[in-house]
Amino acid sequence: MTPMTPETTTDVAILGLAVVGLLILFTLIGEALRLRCPPDQSDPVVEAFNMRVHTWWGLAILLALAVLAGRIGIIALFAFASFAALREFLTFARKRRADHLSLALACFVILPLQYLFVALDWTALFTVFIPVYAFLLLPIISALRGDATNFMGRVAETQWGLMICVFCISHVPALLTYDMPDGSDRSILLIVFFAMVVQLGDLAEYYAGRRFGRRRIAASLSPKTLEGMATGVLAAALIGATLSWVTPFGLVGAAAMAAMASLVGMCGTLVFAAIKRDKGVKDWSHLIPGQGGLLDQLDSVIFAAPIFYHVTQLVWG
Image 1 (cartoon, rainbow, N blue to C red):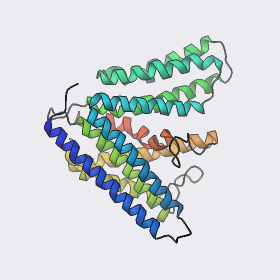
Image 2 (cartoon, rainbow, N blue to C red):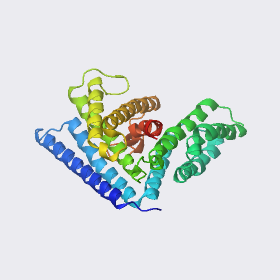
Image 3 (cartoon, rainbow, N blue to C red):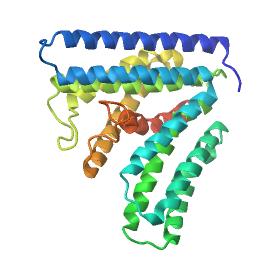
Image 4 (spheres, rainbow, N blue to C red):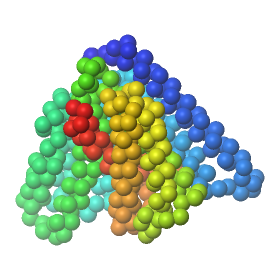
């Protein structure tokens, strides 16, 4: 594993301090909002805001440790995240005894192979391995077991789980394979940039939507509002412009990429809300007290990651 250059290490440290500063700021804002409430009352929006900030402290620490460990640390972190997310998703998927072998292959063969291809920088393979080869292989294995009961539904949900929990998430560490125009090893900073603009855009959308949002996007699925989403995308664009120095995009390009990632991520949360409503559940699991499971935290990242990766490669590759 090649160590980071001193210049990249310095930039990572500066970016890390900026993340800590933002989290401290959001923590202070949350506590100030809580103090404004009467002693015997609590504001659900403020409490949810504070809970999200507390969760992000933990996620930021995990990402920081992975970045310090370098390329292998980041790939290992997201491989574990994919495994945990896939486990949550498959808990609610339709399955029968005939699918056990397919599910075992998905978790213990296809998932590690996907991340191995990312680690080896086999771009031509990791971009098609799950959408083509796993897509065709798993239904064949289930069909060979001879059980046709609800076959289409069972196969489709397994394939959906692989796509969103493994294929999409793997595009975050895949940003490490991007060749920076200046030949540096600063591609690791793109991961931090991507995570910050998506998550902070989500936070702005959540608070603004519940404070002054009026027009619901999909009232039967989610409390998201047009005003909240607009605020979130604008906040992401401003953060992206501020962090443009860590990207090859330039000022305007960084703002546009941040806005795009934030918007796609918010649309992803609507899709996950529809899936949960269909399954009759509020959260994917109780892994994070008060905040649901890993999928509840990564829903926007999951949808935004492949779009961010491919636009980066197509426009700035």
